[in-house]
Image (tube, rainbow, N blue to C red; front, side, top):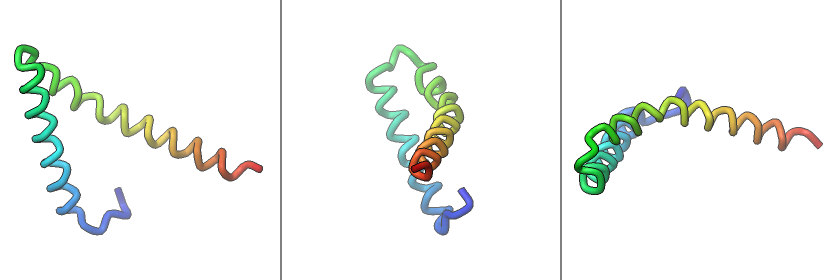
Length: 64
């Protein structure tokens, strides 16, 4: 995102969260190795949906 001032801090936090997600998946789905990969592949779609949702909310707030 263009407005982020501490890019390194955000990246470090993101890596920590990814490691935590991987650990949780391995703990709860150790026999399903592809679950973590499938979740990561969903991130771009979720980001896109989030952007669409934000745009709709902004449009909704502007209309009287």
